[in-house]
Image 1 (cartoon, rainbow, N blue to C red):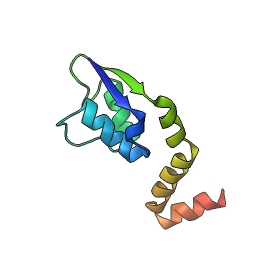
Image 2: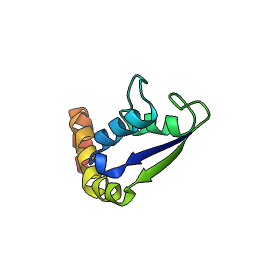
Image 3: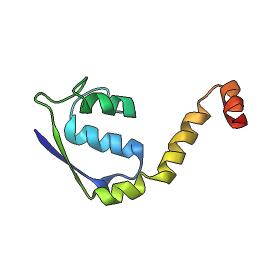
Length: 94
């Protein structure tokens, strides 16, 4: 089955997951919230629509810009904030 997402409808990774869930996985619970879950859907795992999927990404160049380096840094900082302080200290020493 074919689906279309529009890159103008999201500007963060969280918003992308929400948009993808809205378009491709309506009513599926839990909603996508991380790249591992997204990978599961793309590879035919949990949440994949019956018969697979074809995804058309409208305005993908906008998404490339919005989900680029700055968003990657923001995502890594969010994860770092949830790490155990000992791990953070070790990571900062690298």
